[in-house]
Length: 262
Image 1 (tube, rainbow, N blue to C red):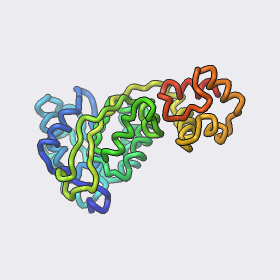
Image 2: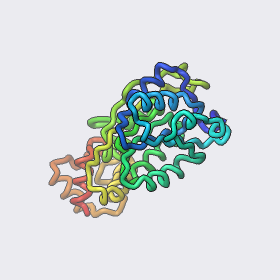
Image 3: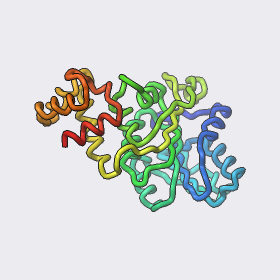
């Protein structure tokens, strides 16, 4: 079942420990683990929560595979652990909504095929998590942390609400079954760079901006329905080239451009 769902179980205990060490959980916070699978990472998380005397914290385990979820028994060792059977893409927003003002963090070994969709779901939650630590495909992690002159739809969509870094990479041999690609652990520390009410408009604008990455900013935005004359004047006002491409624009420039064109 795990492989059919795109899940490769991390079996290297040393790496599981390193991932758990990245979580900076504090008293009064909730922790969500997506895809606990066979419980390797969960065991490390519980150990640290007990050592840090976080017995009052809540740990939520979101598992889609019913066969795996029914085997989970970790809650017997930690009264604050809760198992939720279901698709994280659907259950996560509902769970977070129920938190109210309780701060929370998210961790997980994410099936590669849902990474982009999951990040979009998280970006639309309120409040946003304090931190996310995800084990994902290395190529996707590199796109998330892309820097100057190599920005893309994913890095611009994540960068508006979080500062990202790759903690370390993992070879296929550390998994069962081994994936065909290398993996990486990416850390997202929430740092919202635009007013919350402007996020939906920002995400829509970014999609238009990167609709054709090889085209110029002007051509992409004209195609999205913006006035060419207004775009050209705004580009000039921002001291950008008339043939500038979206890869050059960081979050701040994208947001400024969006507001000036509104």
